[in-house]
Image 1: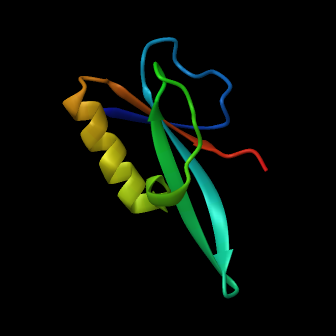
Image 2 (image 1 turned 135 degrees about the vertical axis):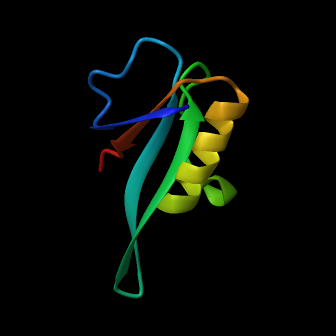
Length: 82
């Protein structure tokens, strides 16, 4: 089972390999939506753009599948810095 940790920031991230879900807000036609992308902490953050920037629910589903498929025990959720 994958454990989800909500940090809000990068501080206190676990030392072991984990999946990071980066959450941010997008405004479109005066509607604010939460969007996110994810990455493997062992590979680094290359940013979420284009097809790798999902609605938050979809990003979480994909991150959980990625973690499970790669035997990664933790997902860390954090806010993107403005």
